[in-house]
Every structure is written in C-alpha cells, then in structure tokens.
Image (cartoon, rainbow, N blue to C red):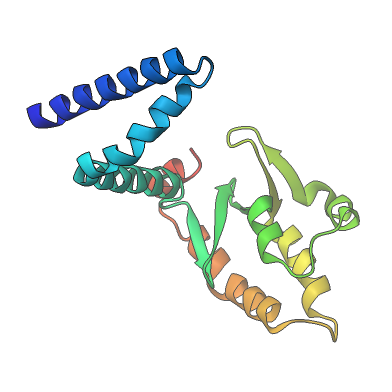
Length: 177
C-alpha cells in the first residue's frame, strides 16, 4: 500500500510539474502537460489499473443484478420482472416492450384500461396477467404469429404465472419491496 501511495504522489507531482512547465512556455496549453505524462503512468500502474477496472466491473455488475435478484424470471435471455399484488400477477411494461413483437402500440395500451397501472413503490408501469394475455392474443392468434411469441405465451401460462403465484408468503413480502 505504501508503494502505491508513493507512486501516486510521484505521478501527481510529475503531472503538476509538466502542467506548470508547459503553462509557462505556452500559456493556455497547460493541459497538454498533464496528457503527456499520463501515457507513461500506464507503465507505472499496470497492476493497479487492472485491479481497479476489475473492481469497477464487479461492483457495476453486482449493483445492476442485485436489484433483479429474486424478482425476475428469464425467458430466452430476456429478464421479466413479476409482481404479486393482492393475488394478481403484474409484469413490468418496460420489460414487455423489449420482449413483444411487434411493438406495443399506444392504441393497445389504451385498450388495456384497468389492466395497466402505475406502481408508485417502484416508479414503474405494469400490466396485469389478464392484460398480458390480451396483448399476446393479438400476437399469437393471427396467421402472422411468430414462434417466439407462441413459445412466450406457452411459457407464461405453463410456468411463469404459476411460479409467481406459488411463492411463499415470506418471499412475497420481500418480492414487492
């Protein structure tokens, strides 16, 4: 740790000296004095730089996935957030918009009526189970239905909704927070 602190102090001193030197020779171009030593600092801190970026990657992944942990299901790599509120399953609308083909139109959203609402706790628009099936009906009951939408509808009916409804009471309390 002491070695790292000494390298850091030396590099700051070198950058400051380069900044002041270039600023004295060419006023207004002092920033170039910082850029030039930075190329050489990569050789001074390779292990520290790599460990810093590894640490950042780990914490970024953790912070993104932690809010999904235990609150989503995955269908073909797409994450879907489910909420169980008063025995009704609700799905996050932004997740559905990424999943459904073709895109959800404004008209479809208006036709959902009470089946679409806004959760204040999560600052999120959600669609109920019945609303989701209504959206899927228009995508699977025509001759233009895609295999992905047919598989998605089958997955929702056979395991998606059932798994959410079977959650124990203790999981539901944590699930909706």
